[in-house]
Length: 428
Image (cartoon, rainbow, N blue to C red; front, side, top):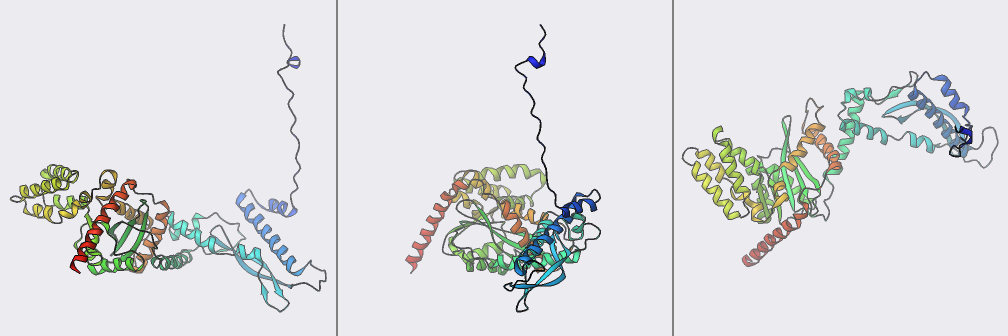
């Protein structure tokens, strides 16, 4: 027997949707009527009308209703004036209602003060540059305005002036900021070349593996005065010179000399093994590269520092006759390439600190950030761009891999510190 749908108990009646009534203000309807298929135009026009309504409401609260005498009113209407507000990374022109107090002083409308604030414009400029938009293309990155709406602050020169002012203020604040009580047992120092200028950068890693750029200085790593100036600035800002710490450097002699001068025997210097390997291989023919690389790897991965030292000595001896330059390179700074092994650092943390890759990766971030710069005019321009890149890059910093082993490194540095204190007391 065929069942009819109306007799089936499983079928339920569909509830009819209820109609909803929406009241649209006439001002918004007027905006709809004036636009031509442009949603952005609608938002601009509707936003202008909403701002006009908010400013008129602020004026009414100060002056009372229009056309009604109020002896207790705080201010009076004073016509209108052409003004500008910030919207979508630009300044657009609009008409602002004016209000004067009973004493004749101009009063600011809260809604206009909020809309005219230039902080959003500054933030848009910094974000655009960080996103790789050049100052020439800044205006093209913004949505177009209706034809009758005038805009400002989007030209190449305006964006450039705004960026220079922002980064100058940012640089002054950043370079004078105290480091506080935060301890950085690990400091990496390296340089980046931008045009004809070299910028020294110091990257600190605290006891929890968190990174922070400690300071920078325009100059070359081969000049010890520049390095000393950087280190002394860090000391003045709070880096304790009486605590032992590990310095990871690329091997420049000026770096080693300056670190020893400022921090003395409390500085444990780890030479970048990758830089040392490149220097050694640069003295050898290509046919020997694989063998020498393997022998260097065996030495630097040995758990015992004495074993590693013997491996490197034997390598230097084997190269002495045919390649004396390579042998001298192996011996030069040999002990500094084994500092981590001497401190008992192993595992992931050892692999991360045996080279300066952590700070060199950051240097590549600076190069990417400043890729639109075609000409570096002076050192101050270089410093401004580097500091802006630092502020942007620090937002993405993560803990160094192997950070859970940092307390072991700190304990080894404390032993070094205690030995130095005992030695000082004996001399005294």
